[in-house]
Picture 1: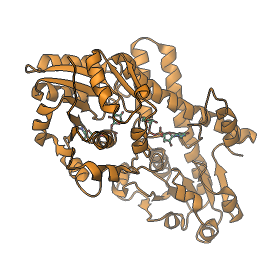
Picture 2 (picture 1 turned 90 degrees about the horizontal axis):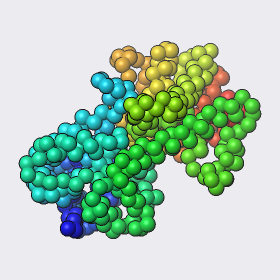
Picture 3 (picture 1 turned 30 degrees about the horizontal axis):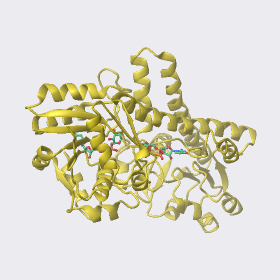
Picture 4 (picture 1 turned 90 degrees about the vertical axis):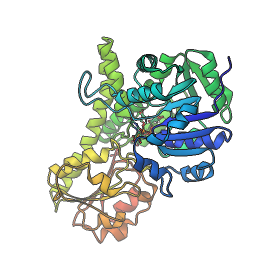
Length: 452
Ligand code: UDX
Ligand code: UDX
């Protein structure tokens, strides 16, 4: 029997669920898409003029579809949509487990399990349940079991359709994906979801696999990307010791067509909600299956990242300690063009500098200052304040740390800034975005990642 998808529900209105459903609604005007979330404030924000997620291009897409075939509802008002749904995406967060078996490594599937129970109890007829969140391999077994033991007469297919969008470029990635991955058991269910994507994605870019390959491919893809960043960062430290230049080395490595030029930018370390969580999940899976050497191999990718963050913080602290102990921190988001600061290197580095007694003046173009400040347990008198501009943060500073590659940090007027700084100011550029020669000419000592 051919299955067709006319009504979609997505549970989870986060960085993945929101933009993904907005693009599906935009590209498939005949499909009704309803995004539900247990957090009514999140839903209210999706229905307001200020969306909860900052992504270039997202506002325009949402404006085109909201109220037409894209709806945001609190979960307790989403029952009718859920009952009418032919396909339900699960896009809730799957954080690292804090307690129990695998704490600190394994993914916490409790939100996913709660969704599966909610679907089983409320769905009607036949529904395709789609894993959109990143899951450990064989998570679909758990979902299947829950659906089967709680279903009230309804029937289900289960698919794994992991999302590969990167924040900051989410809309571009969704509109022109390198590939769409659909893993499943019954070809009819895979075809039904493929037909949705085929409305704007080349059929050749839609990859079909079994469920377990799809689940594992997503973890493996993120692990390979994280490994590339750790590899170039490992080389960056050797560059600094030997007077090689990491950008030159990356260019040479990347011009080998077998390697390719992307994702070879040395940095203060990777952040974001995915890389650390997903590599930890892979480490746990390897350990679970008794594969100790692969577990240690992937763990080393994370260890390298921690080391890189620490050495940048340490260098800034060492310099500023000799002077008046004021440090400007430019950039808090885990990368440019997003307001997301989950697992951002800035949190670890600020924590370290605060514990060492420094006064920090922070700046970012998109990160919410109140939400960011809540990351720190140091109490109300912690020496941390927000500046409205990079210039304000730098005023009176002895060291300037650049932790996010916002384009505007490349255009700062260092001559004007020099006059406002302490006696021997230094810049520690964790993203190689600062105009180094201009800053040096203005009298700053400049240290860049992977450069002498
Ligand atoms: C996603 C993915 O789905 C995750 O697997 C991936 O590895 C990281 O990115 P993301 O969209 O970034 O998660 O998460 P988040 O922005 O935290 O959004 C999740 C949403 O789900 C939140 O709005 C939360 O309120 C909602 N939620 C969570 C529910 O509606 N119900 C729940 O039971 C749990
Ligand atoms: C990542 C994956 O790219 C995406 O496919 C997946 O769906 C989710 O996880 P995201 O975390 O949003 O996306 O951003 P990404 O662009 O991958 O950057 C991750 C981190 O690596 C950032 O902190 C970024 O600054 C850092 N990075 C990336 C580098 O330090 N150097 C690089 O060359 C590339």
